[in-house]
Amino acid sequence: MRDAGIDDGDVLIVDRSLQATHGDMVVAVMEGEFTVKYLYQHQGKVMLRAANPAFTDIALREGQELSIWGVVTWIIKAAHRHASR
Image 1: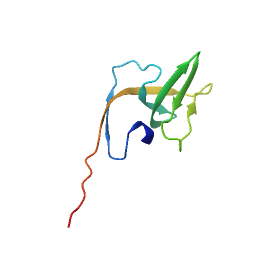
Image 2: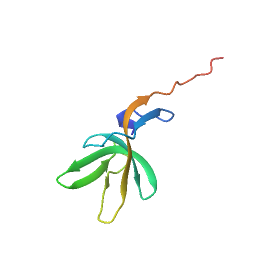
Image 3: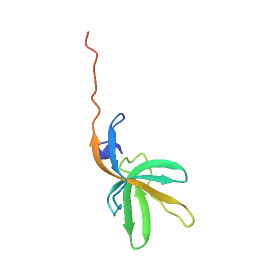
Image 4: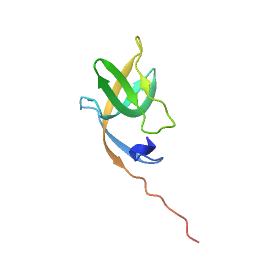
């Protein structure tokens, strides 16, 4: 989710009590794997959209199980420490 402003080491705050809706950034579980993507829902079609162009969108196919674990509500940026000598 690089293009959504999430970098390695950042912390995501996820609210599991929210009902995910179209356009929300979500933590999803698909076939036992966790992923962070944007939820796309339109006319019965469900997809998980990547913000990083290096990753493909995930279209939900017939028989696939998708569980929305929670909705990302905050991103806490990691502090980058640089050694000075």
